[in-house]
Length: 520
Image (tube, rainbow, N blue to C red):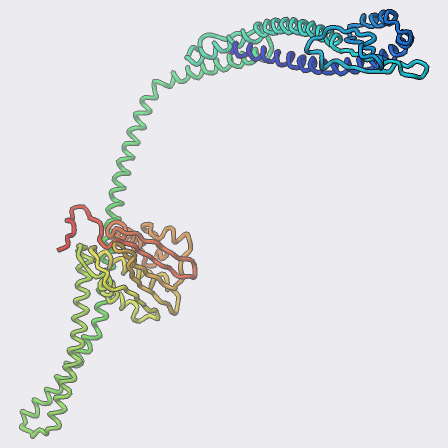
């Protein structure tokens, strides 16, 4: 710090005195040059005029001896460089006097020529050269003396300022620095004493008060140090106990969540069972009606045969026609019921076992739609499909079916709530040789951004208290991402319906403990 302050003071003095002094000297030098040239120009004009008048008589009398003293008298002025008198008819000068010049004086030399006239006739010409170099030399000498005086003044000022700074600034700052370093090292028992009332002394007094406060604070901390370990141990025990309680609560919560997820899966399968049972009522009811009708016909035939009543051919033909028609109706209804049972069996097996197998995507989607169709059958809402054929996959059809079921039921329960008409569109298409897309869209109520962002959160539902568990879309997201290895996006806005887009690989990723799929 001391070196830095000294350096700053020296630089400040040098810049504050030398720079202005140098600028003033340069300005004076330039100004003196201009003034000297102007004086030389004025004196040159006057001198050449006087010499032209004074030399008229000696030139007329052709007496160089009379002209020479006049000319030499001018050279007493150091500014005169040369005087040359020329006659028109003579190539040799009438008089010529010159003084040696240095090479640097050429720019400072001025010349003037005037005619020498006698009785109104020019008899000669006089040329005079004068230089401003002697005057500038005197000015430079004065400047050098001024520089020496400034240097002496600067040296004295620098010594005096450094002496004052040493006593009033540097030494107190050194003591402050040493005191601060001692405080930083923890030596708070040594007081800091700075005399005076200037700013540095006030800083020292503030540091002394801070030292006393720190010493009191450390004493207080030492007083609490004996009980701090006991308090820390007590707090540690409390935190450990609370952590154990939290871990136990978290375990219960995970168990409850797993149970809720399993119940949601069973509820989804239960809806399929109810739908299939409702759908099978029609073909089984028709079959029962046909069987009852045929039973009545055959009972009448048995009565005729038992009473030995003659039977007309027309009665027998009518009985055969009714039996054939009943058999046809019975066969179609029983076949429909068998198809329903077979498709439900496949969907139920897929959803309960969740095994990987090869399948056609369109066929699995159609089987699931058959199971979901009863939920839409007695509503004004329609289901439209656009399934690209021959998309072969090696994945988990059970998880895919449950995802599609939940999306369809969500559209029915949430999207079309309070509406008199609507359409659900199910579409599949191949994005690349290894990726497919399944989308479920509706033209229902849609959802705002706050609902769309939280739709996959567990236990989030807009039907809280009316049967919604908040796990359906959470399960959908988990199955799509963790089981099917894909991703699901939700595109929706209020009043514009909703579109669920699932992109998934044709070959699902391997799950832990599962053998890799083969091409057999």
